Figure 1: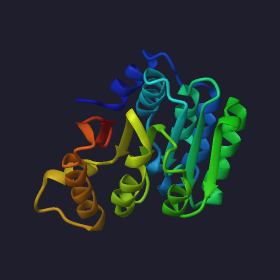
Figure 2 (figure 1 turned 90 degrees about the horizontal axis):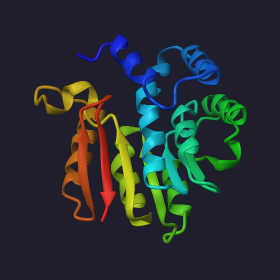
Figure 3 (figure 1 turned 90 degrees about the vertical axis):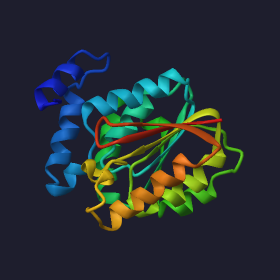
Figure 4 (figure 1 turned 30 degrees about the horizontal axis):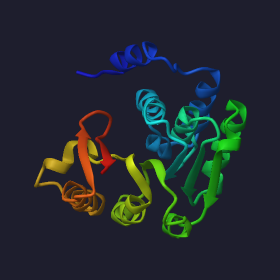
Length: 213
């Protein structure tokens, strides 16, 4: 069983451990109240940094930035000269992220675009050759974000989608709801997409990792 204590143990034995900057970002996010539950945990942040480094990512796109922790983790893993386009609609929440990025020295790697994510994605060049994608936004939009992003990812690049197991309810036919149905449709879409090979992790709240063929 993965308790908070086990998770802290795992994080403490990773290469990128939370520092005072991360602690402050967590505190600022927690102060928001209920929305703070949207933030990824430290172990998932470590994974984002590792995956970015494993593939030598230089171009990355994030859909759903919130208070900037996941984007900070991705930016830290980018190769020299790398850039991360962040899509979000909240000036208030991303302002917290901007401060953290400046403090971490990665603000110059992050291009935050405040607009509907689909508008931002459609404005990106079709031959952009993205290395890494992280989708963690409104669940009803996942399929559309996927459709825009897959053609822009280079062969061998990665697409990640968060919350795909929805607290385990995804496999319970008696459970329903707009987000749940959207995720079920998205998961089926990804599993049938011949352009990628896919693994779905049961860690976190479910994380899809797809490699572009």
